[in-house]
Length: 585
Image (cartoon, rainbow, N blue to C red; front, side, top):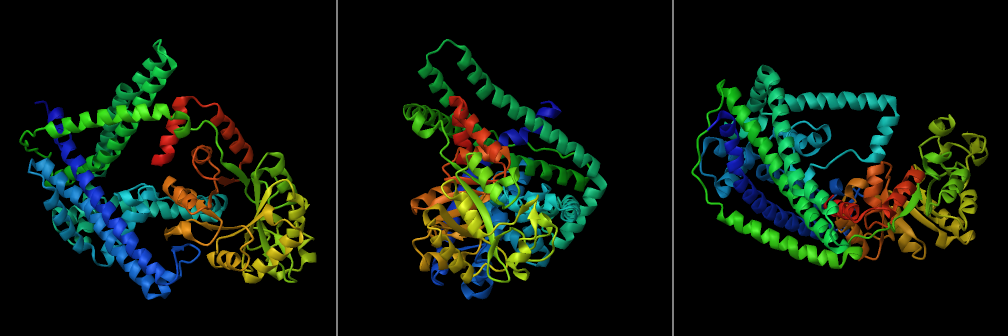
């Protein structure tokens, strides 16, 4: 056997064990997360809550139920790290040594090893793995949080504020360096049973001595994996789809074959996702062993396994794809709708296409065909309500004073791009009969008095059916729904757990990351509407305009309209890809 084939052999032979382990652990983790969810709901319900969100997070630190939830969540996170990373390192070592792989034994050893992380240093390591590594892109991360990222509404502020941007770059660089220097920390803890401190020292030394080779090996590994994946995609998906279009087949046959190959592609993507991280962990384990011994790792041949079970599973998968193809072809237009029914709401009046939070912004939103316009209200010193997003007027009008420090007359002396700052009454008149107005309760003056006053002003204008009052503060929305059930309300959240869809409101506004197909479905089951905010990137706009959401809030109205037009002209292949991406993403 050539050296190259011998070096690939442990990876190829490990596929069946990896898939088995991934299937078993994902089932166990799903069961565990379900049990945790039920337990958390019981604890939440005992406090009179159905969910806890960014608008009510202080509960977690002020009640025994909240503290207990935090402690259970932390312990669960350690267990997740053990099953998702530690066990894979143990199995990688077994693969490389040609040893028999036992899922139960690897899992038990991984859980035993995690106790070494129950200290200050270990907690920091777990926090890095769970929250920082996914954002920085350096180091091992767990499946649960691999898609974690900085919310758009925060990242946009960072990108548009030089001081914050410089600070963020420095922080990312520091965390990246820390991550790189500790890449082999878990290997020291798991393989050599070291303490976190000892493993960290060893990892820093190994990376210091071998960083050039590590970089070279990583690039080579990623390159090989990319070539394999591209080759499989070409053979199993791209070429068959191209031939389907070229061959003189009937429309029905072409669509059926397209459905078949797209489902096959989704399955390949799913399997690739299952083996990608274990393969990378195996490569890291190989390098760890080589760097420690100072010589190329000598692989031990494993006994030849029977692949009968996996052949049977392949046949079952093929039959399943055929059955699913027939069903989807029969109900194609229902499952893969051509047009988008998702409404577009302009952010801060007219988004980036008009002066922020102004009358002209609302008029621009109407002219651009937006369904709605979102604005922000704050109270002045003399009790009037003006439209402004920030805590002061520095960014939009060059005045550092806060709305609550100024009278209406003083605010009216300011302007945004030459246009006076409007009152709530003026904005209501501008939106009447044109767009639905989403009135966000904003700033330090967002309180129950603001709720009462906003309702009074809206009712005086007889525009109850043309407005929705929204806020990031759940207590205010709950107060609004309780006292004024006839009004339309919306709660904005970017992180929550529990029965979020059961919160007391008419609309639930989800930040992009939390707006999964499941979350949107849960909201609809409760008879509520789902808003996604703030969707500015073209790719995300396409994603959510093809989803089951009711509306997106965006700064880029024209772009969103263009995307919506593009969606109308999609091929049936694009319709399928967009739908599957929405379900899986």
